Image 1 (cartoon, rainbow, N blue to C red):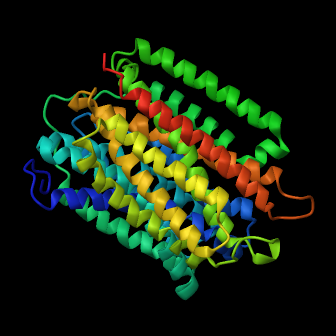
Image 2 (cartoon, one colour):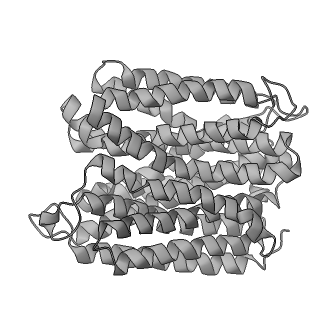
Image 3 (tube, rainbow, N blue to C red):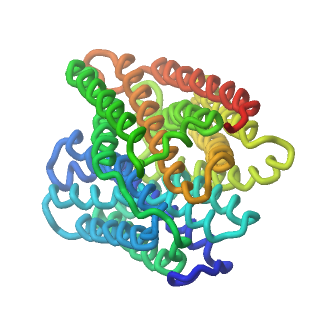
Amino acid sequence: MTAGGGTPDRTSVPALVFVALVVAVVGSLGAPLITSVAGAFDVSLAAAQWTLTAPLLVGAVATPVLGRLGTGPRRRRVVLATLTVVVAGSLLTVAPLPFGWLLAGRVAQGAGLGLMALLMGVARDHLPPVRSGPAIASLSVASIAGVGVGYPLAGLLTDVAGLRAAYGLGLLIAVAALAAAWWSVPQPPPGRSAAVDVPGAVLLGTGLAALLLAISQTSVWTRRPELAAALLAAAAVLVAAWVRRERRCAAPLVDLALLRDPAVAGANAVMLLGGVGMYLLLTLVTRYVQTPGSAGHGFGVDVFVAGLVLVPFSALGFVGGKLVRPLRRRLTAAAVLACGGTAVLAALALFALARGQLWLSFAVMGMLGLGVGVFSAAMPAVILAATPAEETSSVMSFNQVVRSVGFSIGSALGGLTLAANTPAGSVFPTDAGYTAASWLGAAAMAVTVAAALALSGVRSS
């Protein structure tokens, strides 16, 4: 696949995976830099937190819209235009401008998080079946494992050369991703519909934004629960209105008939539950290792070392993705999902029972990465087995949205549990709080494994 052509070559899959990895890295740059942003711009930590929250919200809202555009004849232009927006946003994060411009840049970078499903559509349309399946699996893994690449690099660059250097990394790799996409993304096959349901996109996007704000901002639940409840109610009304419109629309944003297929619906339910447990553990470990020893637990490591804890997550995530192909020779895709979920469940149990040494945190993150890699690589196979090729981007974009919601619920569940176990007058949760949160995540993963095993017997309609 070269420069808009349609012929795959040996560089096409690495180029697509590189683009997927870059958008994941750029999207995650906000997390390790929140404290540095607050200090550099003299804003509160709550305001600095929006450099992470805003791009995640934009990515979730953009995903279904870009997914539908990716099914039409403008897919190549959409990919390149979106990456151009990411590059422009990266320039704003590097330029010596006030905090508002930095936040605007992070919002623009968040648009890139919606590209994953389009890249999967490219792989399915333009690669032979023997290559498209593994390529899509690798793209799915890269979309999560990129988090562990961005954290340590951002922390190191901030410590050595300052905040702008860390964002400068995002600019450099965004430019490289744009070049890789120009080279590797071809024109889609002819005959695809170009219609986009704009009112449906507005309804779904607004509903998702309200939902994710309600479940990701844990402080709203503790300080203004009535506002949180109002956001959830608004989200429910907007999503219901979107579903009603989609049923009557000639060119729906997402084909609900495909989503109602038992295999697809079951896979999305498993993704939602699995996302809760996966992201809950990810946030627990990164927070725990940075808790100072004066709190009676934790290790008080700096941002760079906390980032290094995520390296096993990324490395074994890619290993897990590679294991799926041999596992699929013996097991169904749904059974492989259950294997991945079991590894995540084991990681949660290990963290709940034994976390007194720093090396255990590295071991937990490695086990988590292995499970997430297997889970992420197996998920597309379950969904795409019941999906026409031309609907790949649209259906996988919905799965990405479901994953984002699951991640947000996991993060909120962990945050609320730790907040409930934080003594009055203290800023650090008790050790028992981490144990309780871990077992909550383990319960979510146990249900995930059971659901995945049940999915093994589900047939597509």
